[in-house]
Structure formats: C-alpha cells, structure tokens
Length: 182
Image 1 (cartoon, rainbow, N blue to C red):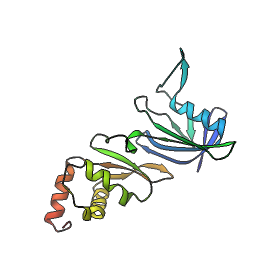
Image 2 (spheres, one colour):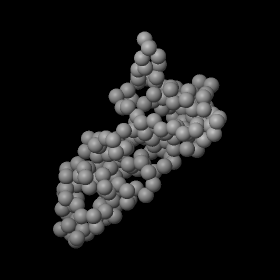
Image 3 (cartoon, rainbow, N blue to C red):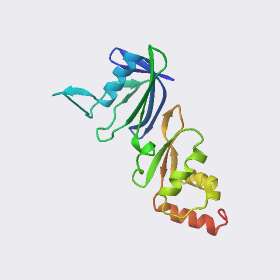
Image 4 (tube, rainbow, N blue to C red):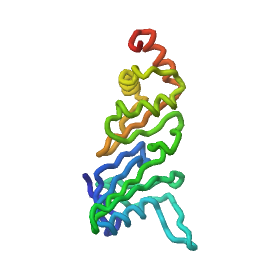
C-alpha cells in the first residue's frame, strides 16, 4: 500500500500496475472527497463551457515518488464503492484489461488473481494459432519464457501483458514438434 498525493489531497493505493508509463489499474481508497479529488486530477476532468474534457499533461499525482497521468486517448473504466459514509474505494482500469475491448495490438492486458488459469479464454480467442485446452499451463510458461506474457510493473493485484501475435505460430509449432505439447 502506498500513499497517493495531489496538492494537499491524499489517499491510499492498494494496487497500481503500469505497462511502460501507461497505468493499467489503479485502486484508490480513503476519505471520499480526497479520493474524488485525486481521481479528478488523474483523469483530467475540468468544466469548460458546461462540458467535461480530458487532457494529457503532467498530472502532479504521485504514488510514492512516481508521477501518474492517464493518456488522453484512453477512456478508463471507473468503479467506485463507498466503504462507509466517509470512506470511498475507487478503481480505474484500462479498457484493454476488460472484456469490453477486443485487445491491444496483437495482445491484451490481464488483471486479476490466478492469471495462469484465467488468461486462457481470451488468449485462445485472440491468438491466431489453433490451441488445445490441455496446453494452457505449458503455453503460459512458454509465453513467460519467451517474454510474450510479462508481468506489469507496480504492486497489488497481479497484472500481465499477454501478446497474441504471429510469433506464437513458431513457438507452438516447435513445442508440438519437440513433444512439449501433445
């Protein structure tokens, strides 16, 4: 858990995962007004002529010593639940880490526990190579070994980038020829 600050507002993050400099999941909780202030700064909401707009700039929102800003072109999902009348839990999640988006340039993000088992359904749907369900565990480890399945930087809930591009044809083909996959 780390403290999240923006100007004089602060709350806590129990999970922050990023791909490069792009946040994939941010889980905030604390005083209702402070969480909402940090969230508003992250997503860059400002009233302008009666409408809200997003912008990309240096956000000044810090998790520990790292500054966060959400890219303008990405429209994050936001989930919130009051924990009590004074405490709010808010999660921002990249659309490519949900079932609402088809996947990112030959891949997708996976956020959640038990990734070795739960990634399979989306991977099997997006990967151009025909796969058997019995290959799931071996394909996971082949992907990790070849850096086609990489853990995202940060802390908290597990998160991975899973690539589904053409390189899998050679990897799966070699594993079948070598008897690694049957």
